[in-house]
Image 1: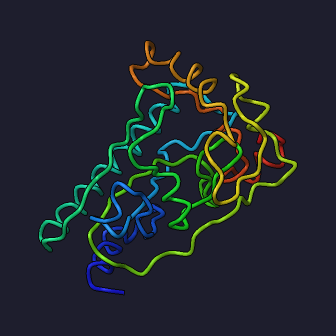
Image 2: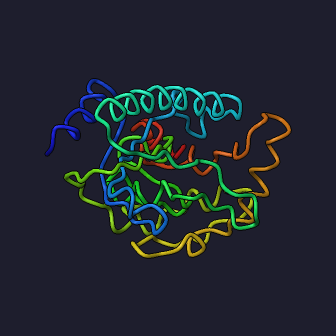
Length: 228
């Protein structure tokens, strides 16, 4: 492990943030940035269906976003000081009917060992389930890479996110590496539901029922009560 990698890791000492390193497997960026550093900040409100409220869910996302932005600033400061070339990919998807971003944070998160794709097409972590916000920084430096997830750990017979989805957007498919997004989700159906919240909350993608219902990251009490 080189000194730069050690310094990046040190930024996350005494935090609950999950992180990992992977090769940059993206044709647009891999020639200039050999590595990707990915980290996942847990929502500041870890909701289940028992306590799910749209506004509270929204606040939890914003709380994670603030923490994430502070950490990105710290990493940027370090990379600038070290004279290392880097790039922070755009988070937003293009509103072109395909709803794809320039760099897949989720693909990189699975490759970096942060989590796997659930049946709801989001990254599931063992500690927090899907209730996380991802960030990615592409770096022109070689690192020691994390062990990737190459298949889902979701139980085959679990369909809680399938049943709760108001847009009937999920195909009930177990993910394995190499699958496309469309193998897991009808993205147009999902975005119809998510876009309905823009006028109320001023942001895209507010529906979080498939996140709230996931057993991963939920309390043992909630699991025993059958809430998740």
